[in-house]
Image (cartoon, rainbow, N blue to C red):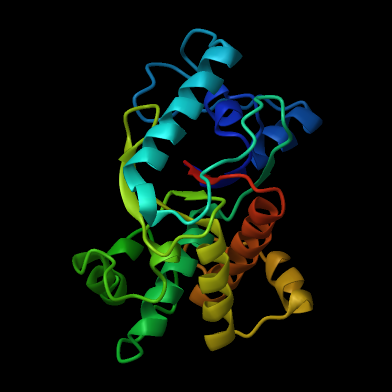
Length: 239
């Protein structure tokens, strides 16, 4: 199972009218590619959705959030929801995503030794477990560690809400994610634009070095969140 990052209208995301990195490569090379998501009885099962209906549902969902947060928001909760609007996507891989989360957890807990490699059991890491058990409180990397969806406006908190599929998820702020990623980079590997490009050239592998995975994940996330902010669009994890 892969992990991807999607920037674009949420209506386009829920319609499935986008390609992840693997799909695009497969199409360009004439290779079959099927997606199986948790709960699917068979790949890509389901009936066709009406774009206008999905767009209305997303806008109504957004309005409910805005009403619920009320004065906690200092700017309007708004972004482009045309299901034909452009999107951007990239793939940090699970190892890159795990490396980034562990890097943030260990930067806050330097007394705990970081792992030498990324393993399938990365969630059992002592520093990550400490952050998780504290329910992400008292962390400078809240918007890195907790959310699955980042909205393109600035707010300092995260919150839980149910998405259109009935899945409860943490929601954060894309501008705060960018600020916290930059802080994490400055406190750890201090990668400039050239370094970030070199980090992306070495994709992490299962059981590979922690530093390679963390740098790759950092570079991909920075690139993608910059796109989200530049185009004022949501950023969503997809797996």
